[in-house]
Length: 349
Image (cartoon, rainbow, N blue to C red; front, top):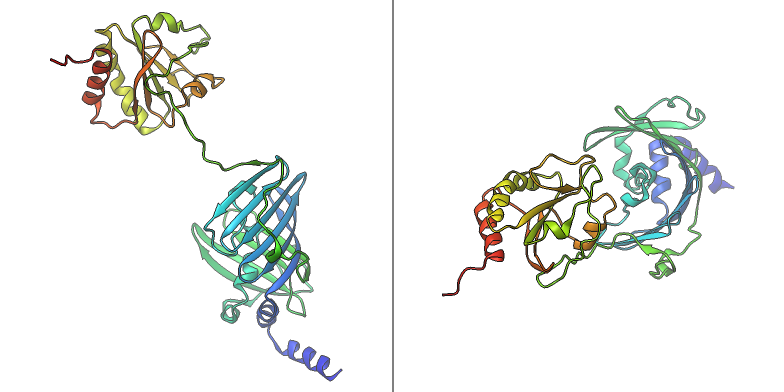
C-alpha cells in the first residue's frame, strides 16, 4: 500500500513530459494497439516490438490488410489485398512502413522509440488540447524540423505516462490524429519468427530481367498500327531492312529524335527504313517516319528494351544484326556510322 501511495505521489510531482518518457523507457518490449485518422481513411494497427532489433506490425484500412516484419536489418512487408510481398535488406532498425504500403509515414509511431531518451523531456512544453482532442489528458507539444518544413506534435499524456492521443500537423496538410487504445506485452514473439514469405503470394519488388533482342534473333512482326489505327506493313517497310527505334519523353530521347532525321537520310541511301515505337505519349508525335504508340504493349514485350532510347537494326530476312543503347548529343556521327556499317559492312581488303 505504501509503495502504491509513493508511486502516485511521485507521478503527481512529475511533469507530463517526464511521465511520458519514464513510461516509454520502462520496458524494452511492448504491444501497442492504436488507430490513425488519415486522408485515406481510418487505419487500425497493432505494433509489437522488442528492442532493439525486432518488430511486427499489422494494420487494416477498409478492405486493405498488411503485415510488416523486421528482424534486425531485414524487412518483409505483406499486402494481403493483392497477395504480394516485398523484401528488403539493409534497413535501419525501427524502420517505418515501406512505400508499397501506400500509407503516410506517420502511421508508424516512430516517436515511441525516440521519446525513450531522457533528453526528450526538454523538447516538450505545456500545451492546451488541440481542437477535438480529449481535454482530460495532460497535453504537451514539441516542434520538429524535417525536410520540407516543421512538424508540430501534440501529445496527450495519461496519469500513468501512457500517450493517449497524438496529433501531428504540418503547414498546408491536414493533421494526422493517433489514438492509443492499449499498451501491453508483445502478443507475438518476433524473435522466434523465422523468415517465411507467404505461400501463394507473388514477390512484388523483383527487378525485371530484360532480355532484349540480340544479333541473330529473328523478329516476328505481328500487328503494328500508327496513331490513327492504320496498319503499318512491317514486311513492306522491311523490304531491305529497318531500324526499330524505341523512345519515350526523356532527355536522351529528345536528343536522339532530333538526330533521327539524319540517320533516316543516311539509311535511305541503302534503302533501309526507320520506324519509331514511342512509349509515353497518348497522341502520336509528328515525325518524318512511321510511329506507333504500342498501345497494348505487345511490341515492347517482344523486343524487351531495358530502357529508352534503344534501336534494333533488323535485316530484310527479319534477323537482328545489331543494337544501339542510350544516346548522347555528341554521338550522332558514331550512330550513323554504326548503322551504315551494319547494313553495308566495310570491305575487309
